[in-house]
Length: 140
Image (cartoon, rainbow, N blue to C red; front, top):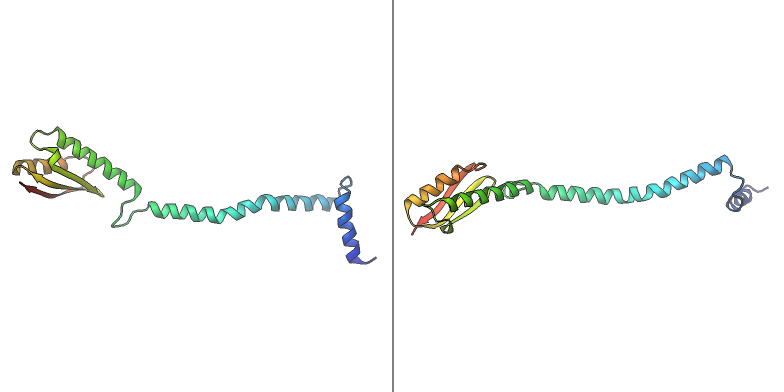
């Protein structure tokens, strides 16, 4: 018998006769099943890894840009400094603008007196998390 024809007949026989499963048929079926279930994992693993790396790189900070965690910390510091300025009777909080970048607080605006300027600097310096304070305030 021709080996090519015998192989074709075996394939045809295997497709039609499921009742007599031979050991090599079971092994082949298992390999095919694994191939089908592993394909989506292999297919989507590279795009998923690329997405994770992009997100991780996007959240990292540089010398000119804050990371996500630093931004949240700086927002908290800015809020605390503004709250302290509102509670003070010498400083008018509406006159002072507060900005924070990597723990450095910048105070700007036009204040009514030198005492208000000095008091705002002292209050901002005493807030937890502030590493330094820049004074860009001007007296009216």
